[in-house]
Image (tube, rainbow, N blue to C red; front, side):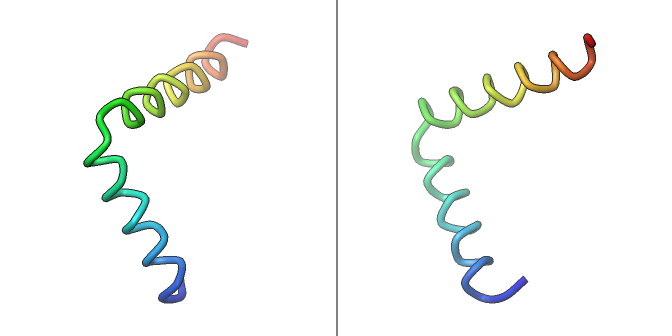
Length: 40
């Protein structure tokens, strides 16, 4: 990965750590996706 990508990932992680609502929404979407994949 180049430096720009690492910086973007770091900023995204920082944003999610600071913003509880966004993190919960994201986790909900991820669990929904994995739930659909495990139940074909």
